[in-house]
Image (cartoon, rainbow, N blue to C red; front, side, top):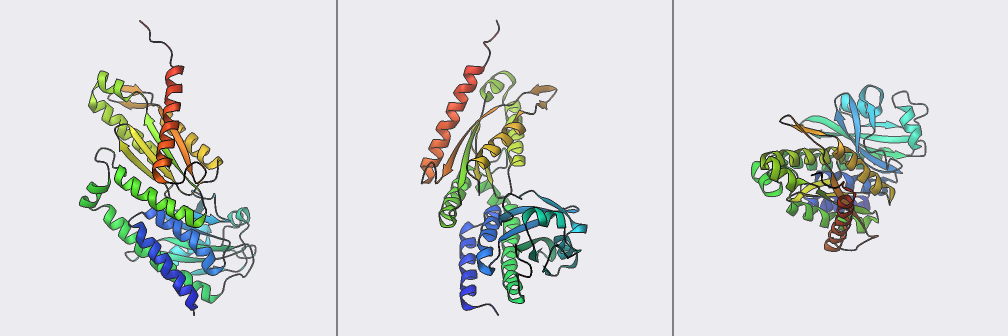
Length: 334
């Protein structure tokens, strides 16, 4: 049976998840960060079902950096867990034919526990604990992870249920783009800073301003301008991880919370990823638009120690990029 200390730790995790509200990405990130200490694991991950694949949506420890990794359901222990709806344990990935050995070796994973995540009676994903040691986990660890999966399943249920509720969505999301609005963004950023300080894992904020929207509105009308804004929003959302938050802060300004993030490589990679997504031409009503945006980044705790400082610094850096874009524009032809 779990010890009293372990049960108290689970209660503390429950409290932290309750404080996150309906932030699904933040909840998953918190779970995979807290889980290793609970059972002495070297890493943890949450994988969700996408068609015939299992996709890493949140990860920590030896699995850090694997977000977006896809495993075939038919050839992985996670897929077996989803098919059977039963917990699975692997004592040695080098000898177990049920696992994706290539993925295990890439992470240095030798043993693991995989527990199903259920939503309305359906297994929608798995909670996974990993170790670099063979035969690391015991029956008691499976019990503890099962308690964590019950918690995660409930959180996923409420987040997905209420995120589609009309009144909740109207209060927390932008009407044009359906991204998080400024209020929800600020709430999640405050929670992210608190969690980052506890876990000593840095985060970053991006402030993104679309270039040239006024010209589009003035020459082609607000209908085209709105279509361009919606397209930009979808591209930003598509370039983000599930643990990130993308929001429309107002007008043509957007924000992204990168949580967690490697320093500084992860921030730079995210900026380049978003810039590449934005740069693809967009066609609306027979006219092609070449989109461009200016992006400024600020890191916590490296650059700033509180919410307003972090946003102000990212905003200042965004405007410096925007000024550089204007200087690089060719002179208008007459």
